[in-house]
Structures are given as C-alpha cells and as structure tokens.
Amino acid sequence: MKIITQLLFLFLATTIYSQNKGDNFRKNGDLEKAIRAYSTEYFTNKNDAKNTYKLASTYSLMYQKDSAFHYLKIALKNDTRLWALADNDFYPLTKDTRWNGIENLQFKKFQVKNGKIKNQTYAKQLIRLIIKDQALDYQQDMARNYFMKNGKAPHWFYPIMQQKKEIASDNFAKMKQLVKEYGLSLIHI
Image 1 (cartoon, one colour):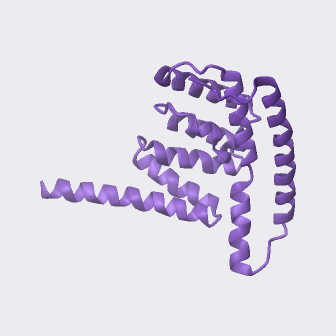
Image 2 (spheres, rainbow, N blue to C red):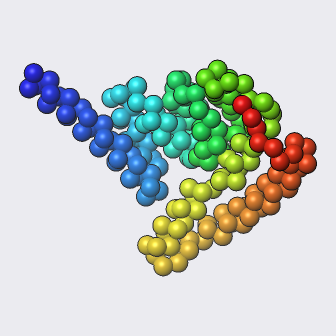
Image 3 (cartoon, helix red, strand yellow):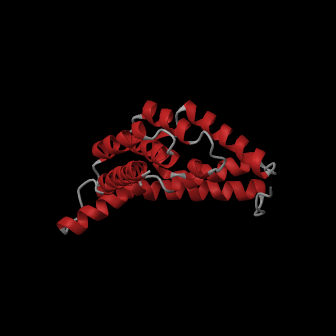
C-alpha cells in the first residue's frame, strides 16, 4: 500500500510540475518549450483535457493549425461549453474551414445539455466578435513583459497595437449592424 501511495504521489507531482513548467514557458514567450512540456504531460496522461487544451492553444498561437485542431478535438471531446469558441488563442484557426466543424459541434453539445438556443446565428456572430476582439492579446502581453524587462517597447509592439485598433473599429461597426438586425435583446435559451 505504501508503494502505491508513493507512486500515486510521484505521478501527481510530475503532472503538476509538467503543467506548471509548460505554463511558465508559455507565460515567458517560449512556446516551443511550452509545447514540449505539455506534450510530455499529454503522453503521460492523455485523459487530462485541461493540459490537452493548453497544448492545442499553444500550437494555435504558433500557427501550427493541424496540430492545434488535432489536440483541440481531443480536449473538447467531453466538453459541452462554448468557452473554446471565444478563446482568443484560437483566433488563428477561425479562418480555416475546420473551425466551423468545431463551432457547430460545440453548439450542438451545448444545446443537448442546456436546451436550444433561441437564435444560434446571432450567438455565433457575437462569439466570433469576442474572439476577434481579443485577438493578439497574447502578443500584447508579451510586449508588456518585454517592456517591464527592458524599459522600452519592442519594435513589433506598434503594428500589433495598430491591428488591435483596426479590429476594434471593425468589431464596433459589426456590433452596430448586429444590434440593428437583431435588437438589444439577449439570446435566450
């Protein structure tokens, strides 16, 4: 019994360490090392949907779309929430035709668990605005970290902020259009 307890403790400690290690690498902008850490954990425990989700989102940030979709499908297998559809880490995937499949499946699972969404088209459009609005947040955080470390903004900060400004302007116009088309009422389930 003592050996089993020690093995269980070792397994749990390794799992927590791998995720924290991956999280730390990601937080510090070293996405390749984060992927290695999350991958190590994945092959140790394929049932850890949270780690698999982090692996998928990190691949997405690196625009490695095939790997991102592969692990995202695995991570969402038993997930009935719509959260992933609004996660800005997955913005690079949204223009890929496979994203529609992810989106449709998550909406279907959500509705099976929570009931039919009154206006699914409106709900999808709002979620798409959210994910787009938060696009480049990771890069903005990396620029902030760079500034804190070096006392100046990195050269790539300025085009990112310009893109964020353009996205916000575009989203505002689309939101006005949606309100005009659907009104201010909330989407009732």
